[in-house]
Image 1 (tube, rainbow, N blue to C red):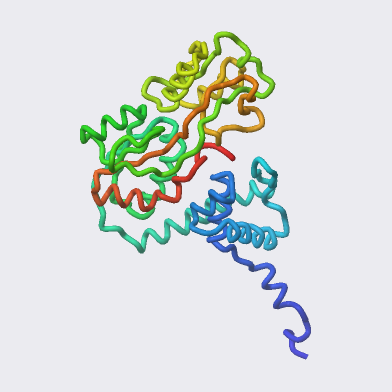
Image 2: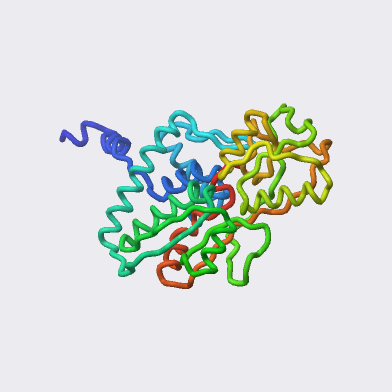
Length: 304
């Protein structure tokens, strides 16, 4: 009897020890971890939410372990999920780096981009990484400033690409990328909302969220004082967590510690916050937008 026939099942054993990750499934898994929901991840990877869920299921079956914990409010990683996420990012980066070697782009030049600090630290880095992978010849200069300053720089021709927050359409050729509600947030079980005048945490002058909050309170005749001012939402969130103030922020920033102010406090209604994009129409700017589009989904800087 030959060696092969004397060891039944050996080929199956070989398959089990040489399984290969599906890179598309890993991309979907990473997108879920980055975006905080299956729906937003599906938009990023251009698949349906059910397809993304199926991919994660196959990864869990492949590894014989649970990777994600799901509940009504959020998605979190298991211990094994944390381990896989680190490997997944490395595998995807190596794949994309190898592909870029064989897909040299003819586009070269310098692109000037401006965005508010919140978007500049949450969305822009991932967008720049994607651009560098496919168009390494494009150099991007980034400036971070208020939404009002970003719009002014674009109008004066100082930048070729503008990314900013605004509650209403700022000018004719701006593109709306996504929108979500602004809501009044406070620390769970906090007492700042009960103080008179209302202590408010706001961003600097020129921020659309600041303007929306102040206009709403003034229109309602609701007394307030500026208790905390910061150039990013991270500063406002810190003030809320310390129960120093309340703030008007995107709904995606709510979590177990930061909650919507209950209706009994009669806070005035707030508008939607919208993320807008404007380009000078150049090939460099349009290449940036084409590659960056998967990053531009609601809640990219926050969670469900």
